Length: 519
Image: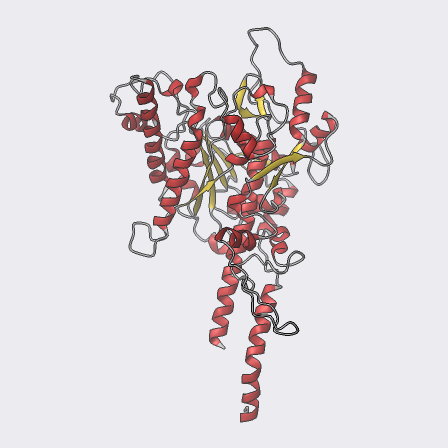
């Protein structure tokens, strides 16, 4: 038994042991499948800026020794400064799209060098033979003048020699294997839902996985079986690299046999019947434009993202990811007929009201999803007269000033309504902010912290500066693959890594607090 003196010594040691435990935590590297990146938040960098909610003393004071000067208070940092410091040296996920495009260093000097970078970047240096398709082939121009193959290659080479530099910190380097592991650790992987810009994003996601020496195979089961507008892919478990990755992920084989990547075409996000309700059209009305949309896609999502019995305890414990975007098909060109043409302003107001209703309907349809994070990727800007530009704008300020000049805010034809994209993005931002506030309120609200989580991905400041990167002389809305699309994926990966580490830090802090109470 301990005598009184021993007990007294133990009591004296307890504060030292507690401080030691906290210091040990701050220097630890408690890692998950994002091992290669989350470790950088705890060591090897700025030790004064660990990525967790604990901060250094924000009001340092001058020493009492020597000068005898009175204590000098340093002004409290702003909320924005605290947010940036919390993530340092990396950028806060909501601020990574604020920055500028800078010249690549070193530059690609030949198209052949660029081709290897795009298509042969797996760690073994083997060319699997897959090449990105040209999703928007240039039509035969009325003038008969067409770009030669060499001119096209030169243009792609120019587009490739710019990289994104964020203002508020570094973007975590993309790692395709860590990204796929994150998809495997969720019931459904990643879904990209929307229009043709989303389809192009899907092409680049598929390509990056395939070119990394992983193999994908089509999946044709489940609620989307036989649906031509909803391609699904899972890992080919006959391929050794895929087998190795599944072992690293620590998940059951049952999960590996389901899709990790699914694309769902939904050009308007709502069904034709929902469009009729939104615009109060006659029930028998047949619209002149066919919107390509997978029928019952929300129900399919609910089925594919639900937890499978026993899998959470075996490592399938992350949210499925759904990335949605839509905007260009909500225009006077496409909606004429649903909306009775009156005067110009009334016509546009009805369409914008309809877009707001679409947001409400879509969010309500998807709110019941469990273990799912939904992202709205900001609508990408169109740039009228884009062929005149061979490099990005130097800053967002230059891009905004350019857009204010006569003729720079409206496409040809004008009825595509590109100038409404910023206000539509703000509608999504506000709707998501209000939804999340209500969902997380500490009261007896409808959600009370349950339901699908929504996140607004604000890529507009970054995309708006790339007037040079559009598909071609005839198309100033879509982008040349894969540059801008890969940047979207890089930003998403950055967010996933950062949020994972924050979640771990909070859990570790809570565990330490519980231990302190026990002591």
